[in-house]
Image 1 (cartoon, rainbow, N blue to C red):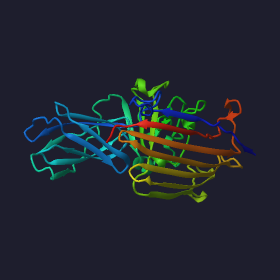
Image 2: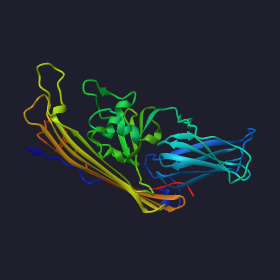
Image 3: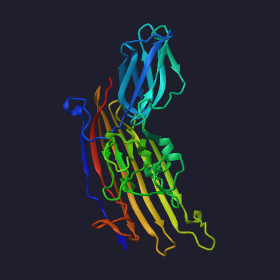
Image 4: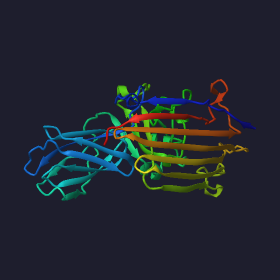
Length: 375
């Protein structure tokens, strides 16, 4: 018997202050950017006011600028998570370029020492920038796309598995699965936590679409929103770029790969077939980018050697368009939809009328507009 359950259409629209001519953050919107700060001095150790600092990245639309104050300090905010080329330049000094990773809801410190020289001369500094956040005391972990997609945490290949590498999170030692439903999840600023099942039953997507993840287990702040135990996951997705990039992957678990760790008891059946696709690039170079991702879910699995396997079938879609409307105004519109049908499920109880705990099903469409400072 094929049992079906569907979460209704959900739409969340966030209007940032940019749409009203102001740079105020949208109401109830989670932080989706990072910050770079630093101090600039000359070779004698004297501070340099008036230095122009410019940040650019092939992973982020637009350029972002700041100017040092009388103490030689600068601060550039509203930076999408990415690796940036940070350029510091002042007339009469050699320009210096450093690379710096900007993480979600974190502060990266990038200091410069400028030497006297011709303006046309540029010095590239290859030393790694410290990633310790000097402005936060809470326990949070940032996980970029490379770590999320390559570290072998479980065979489920879900972004929710990032919880398993964070201290202070409750995990079932027998199954290495999350327990409880006290955590919350946001995607591109929108809260996508399932109101009945918690973050384990949040929306799902091909995790190749994720740019950066911030997981906070302890020390939640007021801006983190409501959470019973102060734990939440904040996700920012990719935006595309000026070059077309795509990926294709196929994840398969045949029955021959399964085994039993109990003598005399046959292995449970599990067969997975999961193709992943992504594509991103420019619609208008330096103005409008897009990114899209797809994953097919197809799993047959038995538990406790039941005769009939649980069958999961679904399609996970994600699309995003980012536009640089003005020098300091950026608009993002994202659409996420997933629908998973599970048949032959074992019902252990219900958490809401006509909604079964064993059924992972959700659908959502959300769009938002955000503002950044740049030039």
